[in-house]
Length: 149
Image (cartoon, rainbow, N blue to C red; front, side, top):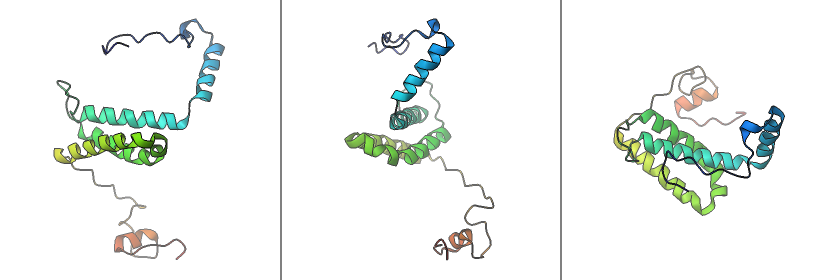
């Protein structure tokens, strides 16, 4: 396989040429692909894509003229943190590499001095409710709220 980023990938002889298929054949090929692919495959690919994109947005790839976009980096970090517990069992020992990449991004973000946005105050957010018996008031007062109490 060529390492040239502009190179055309070699043809996959297992896949039909979509230009020569009818709509019904395309639909059948799509359904076959959906039957084959697993959710954990999509989640793992998403995590890898997020990490790679965030590294690029943080300027960690060495690409010339790449402007840092710390909001994009922050979103990728948060999304990866949310997905990581779901994919770690599937990754097995490779989960360490993903955690290391995430740690490097978090460190770069912290060093950038970018501040995470303050959460927007809405009626359901902790700290915005009155000191009544609802869960939000327990959070704002520092007390632990237990469902049903």
